[in-house]
Length: 351
Image 1: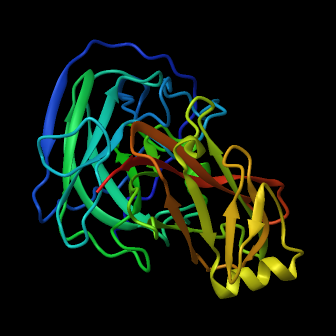
Image 2: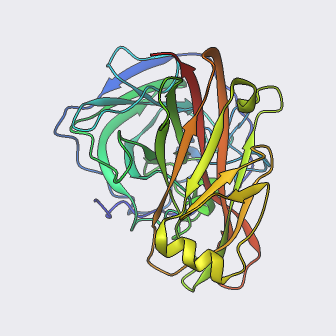
């Protein structure tokens, strides 16, 4: 992975202005070298500000003041073809996917045409991904972003296998690197980097198709990491939309912690709410709106995966957004906070 594009610092407030102008840039399969961010700070007259949103309604203020999750950017989308798609589409191991990134210009800290390099990376689906250790480059493209909206398409060739669950499921990260649009801050905590910089966006959204005729359901991973540098206690917290209840179609979720994490959880007191142990290393989620598996110890340098199994009884056209969030300290001695999560968009069909 390229590490030469380390950031510079920035500060200020933001107000979005500008007209609608759309451009399309496509990177070749071989990729483009990532531009460095060295050199002098831009002068006031040369300052530009292009940005990607962390959530709908984000206007680019740094740090992002929203209380919403920072890891479900609407400006990153995964499609099966270069023609685009309305919503994220499933990835196929060994296949080619297309990453669409929306770059907005201007933000509140500058104006005018912005030139730079858009970089996109992947990591295992889950929380607490460390920068740059846990991230692998997919590609990068040089971009000239005129005022308005620029759509960038980066192909992801030979999508890798992410581990024990069938299929391919990943988190994506975009980083806009421009000599006239510097970073504010960048450290090992991806959540902190994302909230501090409007140049960075994190996209942890996975479409999960569930077939009613399958008794084993659909199994997907969730990686639990550690960004604090010392052993930490971490919680997995579940949530679903107030108007869409997975249980209404016979939907169930079971978490398999695996032998090592299950043993650590039991040693810490097997704490949690809205859950039930159902044998082996598995835990049933009884209340998707507020279930919590509490006190899972994760050591520095670890990022093990737990498995989530989704089953349902009735097909429906409804999409069920179910979130799983890792809460833990962002640094040694800090109070637990959201350090990353995933929104699983579950659809239920009949084979």
